[in-house]
Image (cartoon, rainbow over all chains, first blue to last red; front, top):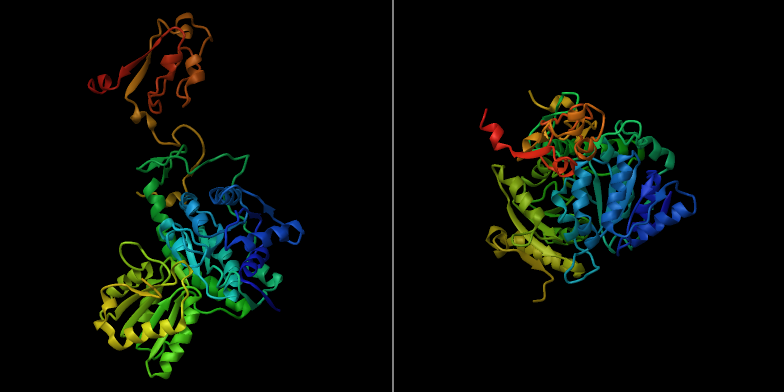
Length: 399
Length: 100
């Protein structure tokens, strides 16, 4: 059944269908309608869950950490500075290997204060050990929210589902509503082997010494470094798990694209534009315009950002002459984070396409499709000789 | 001989002596009980045990005489501070290690 709703409501319905048991969130624009909808579901009795009001985003995730440790399926959502405020608990949730799911409704970060969309908030949480998936329409919001719970509990790693503030969160679009019975088939209840048990007290994540040690039974136990190694190992392993979960979802619901990236007109493309989130759909329009001019260009939208699916990305890009990365975030002092990672992944290849980087849409700056066409045409026609090979191109900058 | 076979992905452990590692190695000052001053040791009765009560790491036994477990005693000195008869002296750890 198709319904027309906002992206935030799509996410809320996804959380309800996933039968999350504990919700703790603090309202922040543009995430607010998502948590409001969840509280409505719980208040009206259509969703059986505990909604725990908190005084901050830090506490919101702390509640989810406690709930998840107790064996409950936990969900939170935030944006921008709220996500930054969670930062310490983000590392904790990943280190404690808790399958929490969070929607990040992407928004620029202060200062100066902004409420509009870019990706700086979640990109700045890249190294916290969370899985990050960027989606580009309402159908993907609801489907990926449901999938995220499955991925998280398969690998015991928390998952962020990131979608663009306003562009997706507040726009209304039709999407297919997954059937509850099918969701239940796809997503079994969360029954962890190890969770808080008053009859069997344990120490959890207390001071862990630099070196390995014997536990009280005389068995050799991990030191800090081994546990952090396992987080990295399991994140790399989860690249395959994400694909398996996508496949399983597709078998039941008969929809879904590649697990790592979505390709558009890439088969014969000499040049490939790359982006994340809703921007990849806008780039499709630019690509169509350039195809009419005879420029063989395609676009890929990267869905899985962490763990970084480097092999799939290299496979998709290595045959091209040029790769043009459009980003709504920047690693200040260097370049776009995604671009530097793509360049790094391609470096291992014998044939390396030129890589250009454009920063755009920062703090909600309007992204005009004709500007995307101009930038792409410039990169495709001038190739390695353009300035942006050495310096960043900024689209829409009026300085 | 690695830790992989311990089959855990987080730092969890049953509470008990040693779950935080052998913290005795952190000690700079070692509490030493003088049995000639300590009440239960001197009078051979179950009395006092203020040191046992106050030790934050439960490294002192409620026995005659009280015994300190130096594998876990961090040398905080609370026992020496609280002992009503001043039977416990904090001695520089280097004085023990130099002997052997």
